[in-house]
Image (cartoon, rainbow, N blue to C red; front, side, top):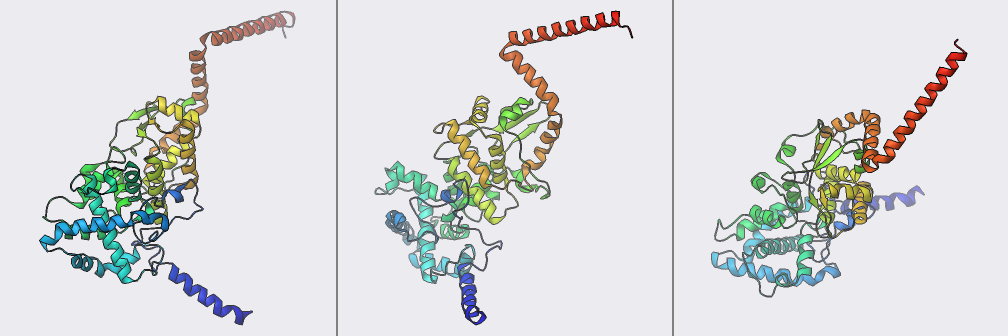
Length: 427
């Protein structure tokens, strides 16, 4: 058996090493495939629907429809740049020297693409993204582009640009942009990117765009949502973020909720004095948070990010929203608006997110914020009794008064019986 297995197992080892990129687990690796077994629909949310970007889904038949449009965009870009001395040869020369570094950015081996194929893909896909940004922002116009008349295509193509398995290294985009940005100074890739991002979620911190260094567009979008103080001040990784009670349960023990004015939806605060949680308002629908949030969570978890704020936020909201009653409570408090989704859909969405994300997010920005909340809940029995009494009085004051009258009557009867017994049996 030994003689039979040794050669075949050696071959298997070599084959596995070829499938896995040598940079897997290292800091440069930033573009991942998400396993189908991941819960909560996260794996499906990370895959493109309309257009493939990069090597992971290149050549898939259902994504070939848009491939021809990429060449049209590249032709249009060269039509503007060739008069300034920027031709296709120049774009190839910009990307080709970084072929090895590009390969190291992908978790899985992409050796099925030789050097020329990979460089061609990066040039074509990178120029397509840059031209797409310019077109969407009205800087250029392609009369025959499907984006000019087909809202269905616009929705899926723009979403595909930010899916985890559809990323190219940001430095590729930056190099191509700087090469083709003629005349110089008309804009910057950061400007184009952030203007593109603003079409998805409100409250982006655009004033901090010059400080952000994303490894790809999805990461740059993720960083734009994280408040500056959370990026600069790392929380001790030993500080765990424990699961909290649902919104309904917290409400029953006297914890209130309010709409928090903030620059991003991550700025959640607990006000100990008022026993109130401030949550920035979020709008949830089928075209926004419920696909971009899983992609950011998948990136943080695959890369092992120290700054796992998006995952912590998802865990917090998943803990808070467990039933339709929780959804309705937060809607009444103006914390969420779920047009396009029912209360049941929203509760199911955050439930799936909670299942997919880890139960203990160490080093989270919410860990210290809610340590105070958990400490205050040690006295929840007293708050629960008091809150239940107040709720009962508010809902049906006459029944409460009747109950109190019965208690007073019983107390009087007990006192009378006790007095009679004391009279006849003084000892």
